[in-house]
Image 1 (cartoon, one colour):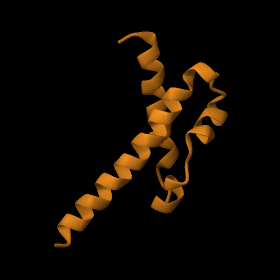
Image 2 (cartoon, rainbow, N blue to C red; image 1 turned 60 degrees about the vertical axis):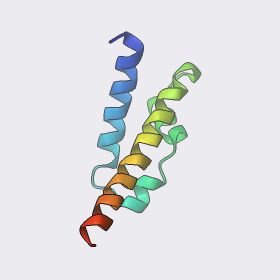
Image 3 (cartoon, one colour; image 1 turned 90 degrees about the vertical axis):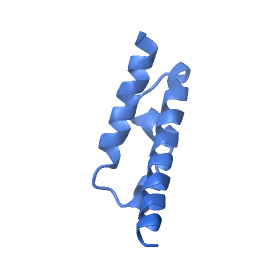
Length: 72
């Protein structure tokens, strides 16, 4: 893994830690700019914060979908 990907991986880990204990509605409000600002990311790394935001939203969608399937 090259250094650029390690940075994105660390950012994803931060996003995971950030949402622990949050209500779903709160987690859905997190924007990539929130993550980027908190970590003081340079503009060249903004794509990593966008991936983190997308990962949070996809994870919530997956959990909701699995919950809906269990209630059928």
